[in-house]
Length: 127
Image 1 (cartoon, rainbow, N blue to C red):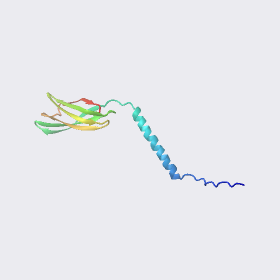
Image 2: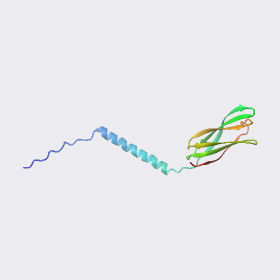
Image 3: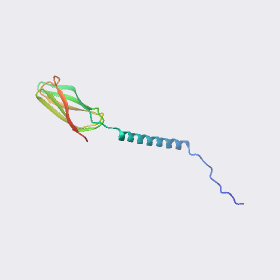
Image 4: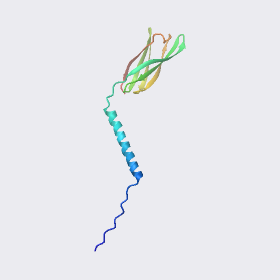
């Protein structure tokens, strides 16, 4: 009678191998979910809000520190900020303002800007 070949004993994979495989699967699914969410999300334009934060200086040389916030879901580049105080106008440009970000610019004036400064965002470009 022919002999049966000896079979290798059946061993189960170690528990650590199952744990690492599960973590790899979890990370892969999480990355795919983030990519899909970002890809399918309807992004709106940047929402830029300038606000006077501080004033420094004295007669003839006033500096207005302006914080610009982007509360929108898109990035803005070359953001033009303008401050008007009476008949005097000062402007500055921010190179880059990411979604949810904030940056500061300084505008110079001859008079105290705390009285009547009007701030506006004049425009931006999409990077």
